[in-house]
Amino acid sequence: FSCPDEAQLVVSDSATPKSGKILTGKLTCDKDTWIGTIKPSGEFSGKNVFYACLYPSAPSCNDPKWKKAICQTGEDCREDGNDNGDGTFSCPDEAQLVVSDSATPKSGKILTGKLTCDKDTWIGTIKPSGEFSGKNVFYACLYPSAPSCNDPKWKKAICQTGEDCREDGNDNGDGT
Image (cartoon, one colour):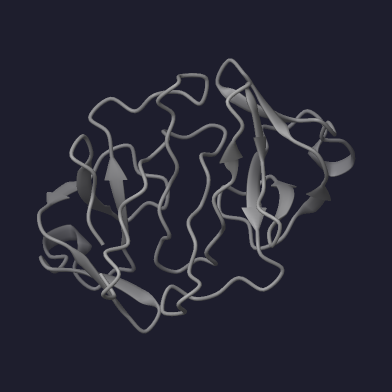
């Protein structure tokens, strides 16, 4: 796994890092864990850490350059949605659009339709209600049974409300 030219590969003990240790090289997948060519050390030694491709200045979801987060250690992997180019967002056929009060949901309310971006927040065509009413919620495209990162079908998480948006890395086709 490697990062695009504009993004830096970082390691953090946070699933939604705004900064982290800058790493070089690639990541490989060992069982259900992403491993970097530079192993975590210091304050990260022995911890369950997260890798991300982070922009030096991450855009908001309203910015044309908004980007998506990569599959992370220790959570179910989610599918990218599609930017429809008109301010809306939709999920692939195999994935369900869900809303949750968790930034790393394993389940949530199933929504239909699309998301739109209002300032820095993704808004669904079905507004949050019930237990989510008035909360800062997160939208994700989630598989009914999310694979581990070791599964050939591992997928990536979408840009989420209330966190810096991160860039996809590249699947090099050889397990990295």
